[in-house]
Image (cartoon, rainbow, N blue to C red; front, side):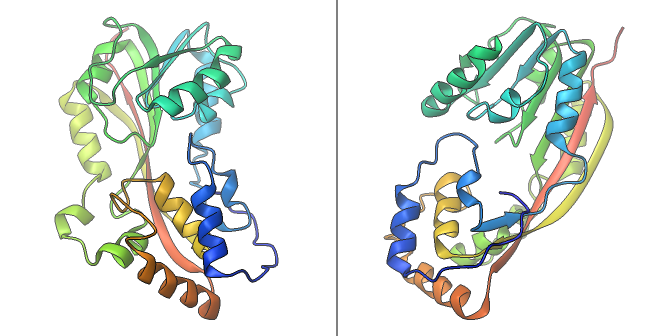
Length: 263
């Protein structure tokens, strides 16, 4: 989602908006479908730009859980050796189409499996919004002096949406994915955390189709989400948006950079 101003809205029916959202592709991490329908503030650190700067200085880079490869493919310069991993078959195909012309390889690898690379193979490892970070594996494939650079989802991210559909969540769930926990896990794997920043960012959903598309695309927000299961709540939210304006939520993001000690 982008932070562009919302254009004038043309009223549409609940059924039309939902049908359009259900028909839209959710492959990859392209969020252009939300243009004019939802907005999200961007973190101040500019992950894609900062990632591109680090890629330009690297000799061998690995992007973990690359999605459809959109962020990596947008980098101005890729290292001589660039590899990405992805676990979801539709995204593997999408990433291959984007990254092979850039000379980057794509490896189909389950998210919870060991990384299929030798020890100390890369001087840069990156990941944007990984489902889970396997710190021991990252430390293993980094060369001494190498860097892990990642933007991650923080605690209680977009919980206004989650709790609208699922009700209040336990405090331990709300506190999950905390940046302090990431620091502790990185250090336990033998990495030195050199940068850690967190922000909460305003999101606005301008129609119910944007909510449906978001929940179909970000499947862990409301696990097993279907329109049929949540149709009464969706219809009520549609009426709320139509009468009171955008549904406001807040995403949580943190940036972590960790370095492997050594030359």
